[in-house]
Length: 217
Image (cartoon, rainbow, N blue to C red; front, side):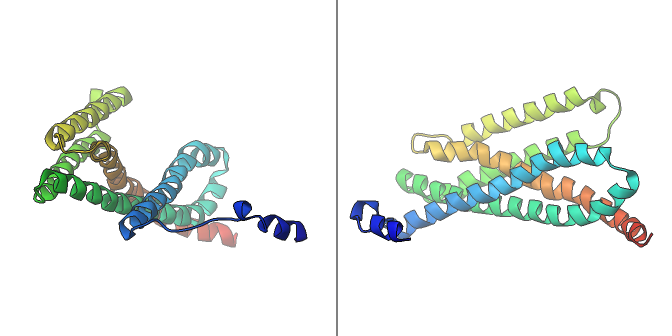
């Protein structure tokens, strides 16, 4: 403790902390940190489900799986859904700031709505096709490589289209990068809530009575 206080007596070794110059800059910093932290939680849980939980559950006895599944997945899916929502909402706010800056540089604030509208429309239409490729099908439509190729084509086409629609001399690199990355994040959010959660919610409801019975045995 004494050594620590002695080190702090040197001005250059003392911890320094201060906010940035403007509220706008502080907001941008806070948004980046929130986006990063909740994005790590979201994607981390995704890989936990795919790489750890699913292989482990296959090794367990069916009775044990039924017992632990609803307890584990109820909490995990709550964090999964919430972190996905926060990540995308924060990202949209960050995106809107860049849209506003670019529109002011172009001298036309109506471009904010135009750019955001095109972006949203392109990626919602892309999700419709991606959702269709995930539905049960027969023949070649049920082939995993066909589905992968189809999703890849849709994503590439949507990325090209949104860059073509929103590109221009007054558009920043951040605007264009988020137009693609944010679109992928929006698709993942829609998939998290519209596909993954709907399926997991049913499984949790179905396994809870069995888990209660297993716990009384």
